[in-house]
Image (cartoon, rainbow, N blue to C red; front, side, top):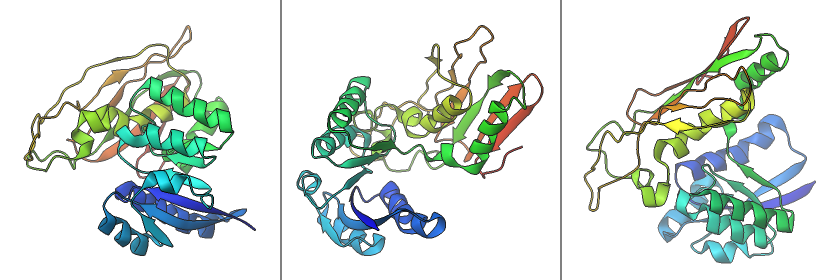
Length: 277
């Protein structure tokens, strides 16, 4: 069986989640290749060392540039703040590494285009972590829509709410810093709803949004932030009878998620607990 060595860049929450997936997916679903958790990288050496032990990596390092250039690394898994995605991904692609990148893919369209160009130039395999589209509930919803079971789609409304940011005394995170996060809740969690809309109903014709920051400051030095939350959005689809696509995201509401779509015949709804009705 062919073996591929993974370098994980970033040891935070998503780094842990990806490590769990790397460990258990071959057990649960089988795999035609063997995945070796080779090296984990963090700029903080102590965090890197601890992550290597906890996440099951053979080595740890603090310099991602050195790691992505190593000949024994096959896959680079990017779980760092959004502002670093493009630089790491482009370097990895130019080094001939396959790439898994957390969403949002980049800070700007120009960065995303540069990432794509680098990958196409070397022919590496790439993936952005839109994992919800692979859940059984969404796949079932897509199947019902493709079979015409709910008729022509009239409207789709999605929301993804989290409550961990509702406390104004919660310390400032990079996710609240526009220079590091880019697009606030839209890029962080709203992208999952947008991806689900694209999966189920198609591409967008136009976009508009209303944004609001509920907690403008947090208790850390330089705590002024400019990442808006939530972002209600109306996203019409390109057709004569185009459905409307309201999307709502927030980190200051009770955690929940739902992706309903209404057709002429009936409706379907996929929930964050993995059920479809």
